Amino acid sequence: VVAQQVLEIRQALLQGLTEFFFESRHLKVKNTCGIFITMNPGYAGRTELPDNLKVLFRPVAMMVPDYTLIAEIMLYAEGFGTAKELSPKFTKLFSLSSEQLSKQDHYDF
Image (cartoon, rainbow, N blue to C red; front, side, top):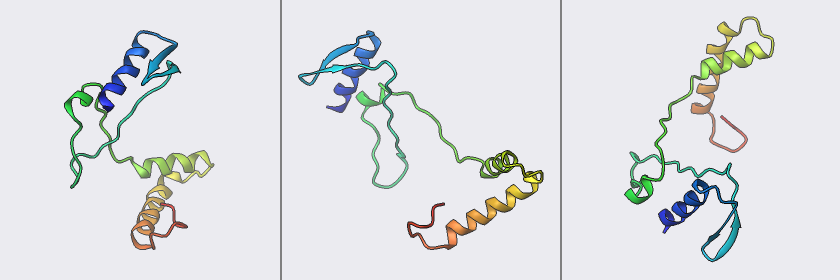
């Protein structure tokens, strides 16, 4: 069902339509819309996408960001001249905090 719905939207976008019928409803099309699926198929209990849905999407590789580099850039942006030396310390501080502090909502790591 979902694959057919996505296909209808995709066809309307590819044809450059401004309006189309979707499940008996008249809808306007925005050519800037996008449809994304986020999955982690390697985890227990998760399943792969069905092939008819998989062919409608392009895979995108994800990776863990370099938190030290992000911290360095943020510190430089705030005017810290020693950002290169401070960034690994901040990264370690927040890493340890997220691991060892309570998982309550008021901690946002």
